[in-house]
Image (cartoon, rainbow, N blue to C red; front, side):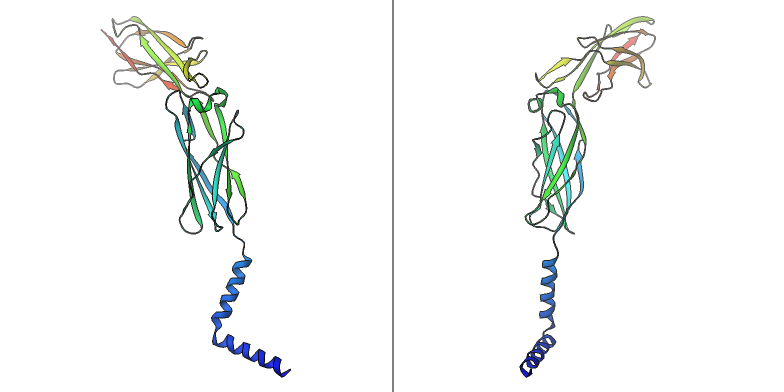
Length: 253
């Protein structure tokens, strides 16, 4: 009994003389009891509409922000489209810490006709994010949706650049879009195309709508009553980007 009382007394004396020892031990226990956490705060992508032609590839940038206090956090962004349901990943950097357990990860991916090869890939895509760390939980969340579309182009050629007032001018053009499988531009028929006119000192307005022929050709006729510039405009759709032709002007004498 006497020995027990002496031990208690000595222990009390040590704690009284060195209170920091007890606080340090307590802090170590508390830290060990608290598990680390990882959460996906936000994600972004630029651009969210990627227009791919048959020339140089286009690049998109993905950014993900984590709230994380685990060791060595990593992020992967996965992409899925109509004919690419799995297997497309964005390589993200090691992440940049900027206080309050926040990390920002950035990655880029390239989109080219030779990479896609299948025009069915055009349309709506989704992204989803996986976050992991050496000693923390695995976290997954939806990312930013985006669209992948085929580039298009349209030309315009009037039958004359100068006419008398009241004369008719034939407007011809051609609508094409990128074919990723052949890495060449192809005719785009059956599309609604607006013919727009801008008189001197005015603004462009639609004066007629025609459909492109099976070979992509566009034809219309206008009555030239004043100096004006003309252009053809294709609005685009879910798989093909819009296009506007270079303007061609007609002088009226």
